[in-house]
Structure formats: C-alpha cells, structure tokens
Image (cartoon, rainbow, N blue to C red):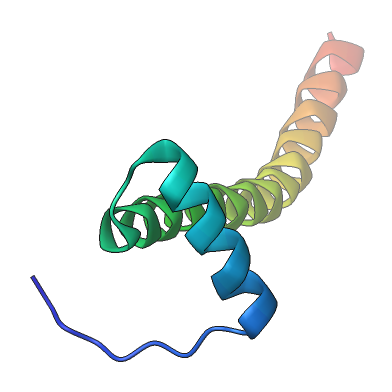
Length: 76
C-alpha cells in the first residue's frame, strides 16, 4: 500500500466527508473505491478509442478484399 498526500477542493472534501459519515465508511476506503471506479471508467474509454481506431483500419482492408472477391465473381 502506498501513502500519498492529497489536496482536494473544499467542496469535494466536504461532500466526501458527509457521504462517508452517512455510509459509516472510512475516508481512505471511500477514496480508494472512488479511484478504482475512475480507473475502470478510463480503461474502458481508452479501450473504446483503441477499438474504434483498429476497426477503421480493418474496415479499409475488408473493403479492399471485398472488391477483389467481386472482381473474381465478375470474371466468372
């Protein structure tokens, strides 16, 4: 486990304090869970971008192959 110093805006800190007291959850646990969820969200966003980029590359190749097959069909 890593120790770090964290600066939060006052409003965010106050909201977190209220929520953690209502949930009876330690501030540290709450922040760990929040960062974990945020990491999952960002990993999905990055994967979405990567898939979209690779899909475009694949689409170009697929169209090229389709045209080649159409030429073969037309020749027969």
